[in-house]
Every structure is written in structure tokens, then in C-alpha cells.
Image (cartoon, rainbow, N blue to C red; front, side, top):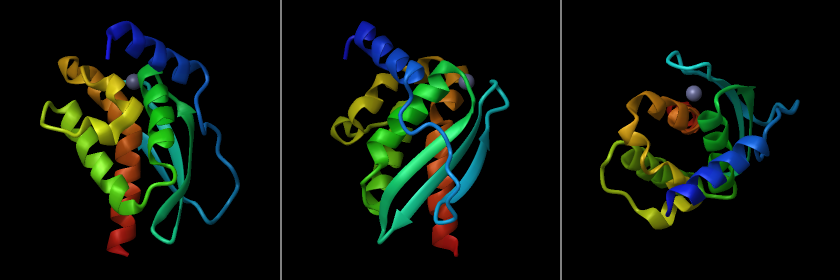
Length: 142
Ligand code: ZN
């Protein structure tokens, strides 16, 4: 994907983030994520039913990379089975750490394929995805 297109997708998700804004609903699992190397602080809530990620919402103060990545993350993961979500998370992490990954699984999230070249921004991009990973891990351990 060419760099101008990547930048415009990131900007679009930053200016008009999808699924931003929390709701009052106890059926969601919530987590709070902080990135000390940036201003990023996100609250994330996920509804999982019958092993399917039914909905994700997020809110918080964060930089453009972090907000856009959270928005793309929600688009990428909502509607997927938890097993698929785990696979996508693994591939996304691989992409951002220069390991092999499956482009097909990641969709629009490949706009961050070069973020490993700017390691201080990696956490911004990964923060929301780590939040989902944390929630899935907590569910497994319960
Ligand atoms: Zn950031």
C-alpha cells in the first residue's frame, strides 16, 4: 500500500474514529490501557457472546496514531470469533515487530506495517490491540 494512501486512511480514522465513546452496559468487559511513552490513555470495553466479539468501544486521550489504530482495530475485530481474534492479534503483533504475518487477515490494519521503523511509536499503535489481548487472556484465566 502506498504511503499517501496509508496516511489518508490513518487521518480519516483519527478525525472520524469508529466505535469511539463508551456506554453504560455491564455486559461489556472493561479495561484501561496507558502508554507512558506518549499521552495515550484508553478505556476499552468489549462485549463477547457465544465466543464472538459482538462489540468493542473505546474512549480516551491519545495521539493520532493511537486513536486511528483503535478505530481500525474495532473495525477489524468486531464480529469475529475469539479464536480468529487471537490469530489476528498475533499477526498484527508480528507485523509491528517485523516478523512474518498474513496480510489477508489484517485488512486496513496493514497501514501500520512500517511502524517497526519508528519504535517509539509502536506502543501508540499497539495499545488498543494489547487491551483486547488483555481482556481475552483474563477471560481464559477465569
Ligand atoms: Zn501515542
